[in-house]
Amino acid sequence: MPLKDFLDALDTIKDPSDLFIVVLTGGEPLLRNDIEICGREIRKRGMRWSLVSNGHLYTRERHNSLLNAGMGALTISLDGLENSHNWLRNSPGSFEKVSNAITLAASSTRLNFDVVTCVNKRNIDELPDILEHLTGKGVRAWRLFTIIPIGRAIDNPDLSLTASQFVKLMDFIADSRKTGSIDVKFSCEGYVGRYESLVRDSYFFCRAGINIGSILIDGSISACPNIDRSFIQGNIYSDNFYQVWQTKYEPFRNRSWTKYGKCGNCSEYRDCTGSGLHNWHGDKSNVLVCHHEKIRMPECEY
Image 1 (spheres, rainbow, N blue to C red):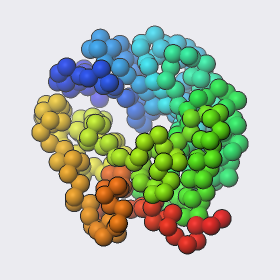
Image 2: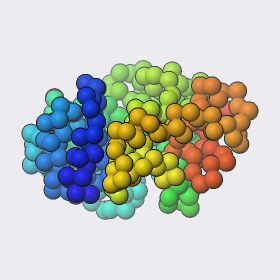
Image 3: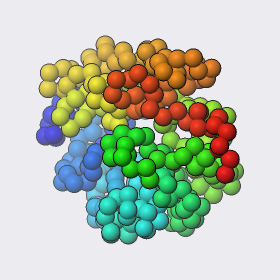
Image 4: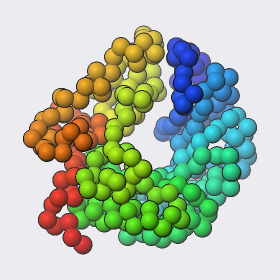
């Protein structure tokens, strides 16, 4: 997308809150050579901005140029120790590059920095060692999440956790949070029943379309970029972004339509409201993954 098109859409937002932040993600945003220009333009508008990166292009020079452009927050993905990370990323040199990027980012005292890890069958048993690896680099915050069966995860069972592995993940996060050595938390992906107060700072709430909007590469207006494209609310090339935000987003803000399938008669629906919206794909007749269901299953002893 041409930078001007994105900035024009941003300019439709009038009087943004002091809490408003623009997150540049992808794909890989550092493949663009104008991210620093974009960041400066965002700051000129009185807005804060952050970046989500795989770390491959995050060199010391880029680190300094991004900070000079006003980047205030950064998230880098680390998906296991060397073999498991490189397997998931399908890149033999990925782990070394990401580790170097994490060292750089963690060295900045002014940067709000965290690492995210996609937990799967290949790295679930490595989590204590990953924790030690990150703590040794001075990382202060670590978010963990799982993969739902969309995209290539549909046909690759190694990408999805079993019910017992999911409970193991919850117990790991809960135990790690007691030590205080690093701020470990589960992501915003779904409701986790009795673990809610143990694995997060606040109870589950899917913020897609509530206080998260997005502009996709083709100009489509949506919310969390990981949700189904059927949720698109308009396009910046034909619609005013801020007006769309003010007047549309009905499926996000009234989620009574999620009371289908296993969610229809669930006693936890009031707290869950159908889980994260990225869990509703295809014909939306049933939620793809229910974490609470995994936790309740009798085979969840390990």
